Length: 312
Ligand SMILES: NC(=O)c1ccc[n+]([C@@H]2O[C@H](COP(=O)([O-])OP(=O)(O)OC[C@H]3O[C@@H](n4cnc5c(N)ncnc54)[C@H](OP(=O)(O)O)[C@@H]3O)[C@@H](O)[C@H]2O)c1
Image (cartoon, rainbow, N blue to C red; front, top):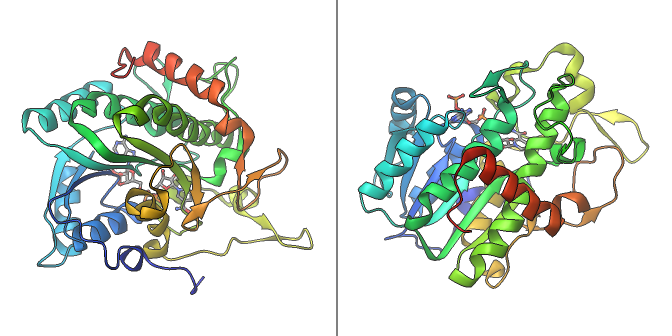
C-alpha cells in the first residue's frame, strides 16, 4: 500500500492554525496519527481518553514541537455519565470545535454489558459518540465537520431493529457490524439535520491497519479478517500503515473537495461506491447504511435510549 498518502501528506498546504479539533481514540492506532497530523498542521486538538494518564504520556512523545497543542481529558464512551461530564467540561471552557473525529472503537469483544444491559460495541462505537456530539452541539459551529470512523465491517450487519442488544444470543461480529452500520447512519442523519446550520457529517472506512483494535481476536477469527482475491481465494487484507489509515479521516475533516457535500461514506480519500449486499468486501458501502429513513429511525431510537437530542 505504498502508493497511498499518509495523513500529513493529505494536509500538506492546509493551515489549521486557530482551529480546534476533537478526536476520540486519539492516543492509539489510527486516532493518534489523526491527532499528530492535525496538530502538525497547526490545530489545537482535544484528545479525550478513558485512560487519560496513558494518553498524556503517549501523546507527549507523539506530537512534535512547534505543532498545535494537544489536551487530554477523561472520557469513557461506554459510560453516558462520563460522556456528559466530559462534554460539560468542554462547554464550560468555552471551546468552539471546527472538527470532530469519532475514531474510538472496540471490535469483536466478548459479550459485555454496560449501563442497563447495553451491548458494549453498540454502546461504545455508536451511542457514546451519538451522545458526545449531541452534548457538544453548542460548541460545534458553522463550517464544522463531524467525521465518524466506520469500517467495511458494516457489511456484516444492518441495524438489528428486532434485537439491537443481542438478547436472543450474542455474535461478536454481527455486533461489530451493527455498530459500524450505525456509524454510517449517524453521519447520514446528522448531516440532514445540521447542514442548514453549516455543519456537515461524513463516515469512512480507513482501510485495514494492524492496531490494538484486534486485541480480542482469536485464531478462529482469521476467516473473519480474510478477504477474497480476484479468483475468490481467501487472502489477508492489504494492510496499510497507521499514517495511511489516518489519511481519509483528515481528508474528510478538511478537504475543499468535499465543500458543499455531506452524509457521504468515504474510503481512500474519495467517495465510496455503493456495493450490493452479499459477502463482505474490502471496499464500498452498503445501501442499507445510507438509507435516509433508517438513519432518521436510528436517530430517534438513539435519542430515546440516551435521553439526549440537541437537534430535534
Ligand atoms: N484498524 C483497522 O484495520 C480498522 C479497520 C476499519 C475500521 N477501523 C475503525 O477505526 C477506529 C479506530 O481503530 P484503531 O484501529 O485505531 O483501534 P485502536 O488502536 O484500538 O484505537 C481505538 C481507541 O478507542 C479507544 N476506546 C475504546 N473504548 C473506549 C471507550 N469506552 N471510551 C473511550 N475510548 C475508547 C481505545 O482506548 P483504550 O486504548 O483505552 O482501549 C483506543 O484509544 C475504530 O472505530 C475501528 O472500528 C479500524
